[in-house]
Amino acid sequence: MLDSLKGSNMRDVYIVTGSEDGLIGVYSSLKKAKERALQYVTQDGNREGSMSHEYSDYYNWFFEADESSTTASVTREEVQ
Image (cartoon, rainbow, N blue to C red; front, side):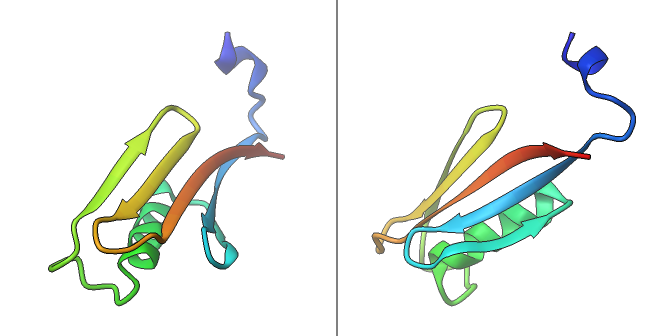
């Protein structure tokens, strides 16, 4: 049913929000949005030395790092 409601001109965008800085960016690619969120929570972009955790459902992904209180979220939105 969702596919029938979603017209051919509807697109998904992914909004990345950081706990300290608010809106970080808007992406057309889920992969790039998740990479940016992960980079934000590890703060130096180095995945080694800082374990991150990802929680998700269909519309939201949440990221946090072990040694930091910084979090980021990715939210899927449909736009025309």
